[in-house]
Amino acid sequence: MTGQPQFVADVDQNEYLPAGRRTVDAIVTVTASGGELRASAPALTAAEVIMIDTSGSMTMPQTKIHEAKKATAVAIDTLRDGVAFAVIAGSANARMVYPADTRMVPADPRTRAEAKEAVARLRAEGGTAIGRWLHLANYLFAYQPAEVKHAILLTDGQNQHETPQELQAVLDQCEGKFTCDSRGVGADWVADELRKVASTLLGTADGLEDPAELPAAFRAMTEGAMGKSVADVKLRVWTPAGATLRFVKQVFPQVEDLTGRGVDVSARIGDYPTGAWGAESRDYHISVEVEPQAVGEELLAARVSVVGVDGPTIQVLTERLVLARWTDDTELSTRINPQVAHYTGQAELAAAIQEGLKARDAGDAETATAKLGRAVQLANESGHTDTAKLLARVVDVVDAPTGTVRLKKQVAGVDAELTNVRSVKTIRVKKKQD
Image (cartoon, rainbow, N blue to C red; front, top):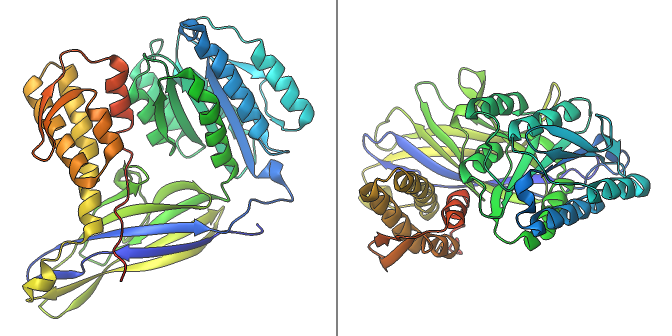
């Protein structure tokens, strides 16, 4: 690969621990820059599948299916020449829109024009079974040697024509095979379903109230996929004998707990999936429990590497150390690292929103008020103004600093779903200049 991006990593932590303390927390910021995708063989580099909801509800109103067609055409035009692509129509079943048979074709002026003509002829009817759409996408990708395999999934409704277990079974089959960005449009999609797809397939999830937002959203997702320059990157974490890795979480640009998705390389080394990378930056929270040492002693608590995987070949792209030093100096040991504190709060914010909305749906007003009040407080403390605005659509904020709120008596369904689907989005705290 030519023009491979350069990876750098930085560690933010307070490495000083009081006597007897076991837990070591660090924020690892990984940044990739300066890469270009393989120019000589783009057909072997990227593949794109667009899944567009064509259930009957997409005609209520007609602007949904109209803008979805327009958005799909924009995505097709955004593909680089040579990138393999296909378009799927999703209802209670999945069928090929372009090409007509079950395969993918390279993007060029002719195939783009043919695909857009086929999309323009789409009609909306039937129900919704997202797992069947994903199953067909997975089948298409299986025959592609592309390094970066990306899908877009658009739906406007609930996954009514298959069980949650059926959807989960398909997601288990698709995991690690391709990434997928999921989007809801209109007012009847379900945030938990979009987040489940995006989380399992290492993509993003969001909802769009106005169908007119679809073309720009599809362009952004496709451009993001076309900008990926390393296909399979993993976070490799080594911990010393006697240590316990408490968790590994991506905390920016969104919260994603990777702990349960680790694959053991050896007894003390685990690999955690991060998907494909372009020019971007992400933050990870690593928490390790170690055996306490004597005051004055230093311990390597973790070695965090970013590794590229190309078949049997593993390349270490960058590496940083997480240290622990035991001290009896309370000024050193009680310093709160702002990065660790900020992202701990951001993860709690996401959980509070999701738990509060779940309690609200279950009729548990007391728990819902407490959780959503805490979410308002955390959003206020962290300066997360976008989340604060969304929360104000489901609660009346009496006092943000104390988290005093009242549940709104009438809440539009889309307001709750937007708050839910965007709960995992995080912001960065500004670092102080030395």
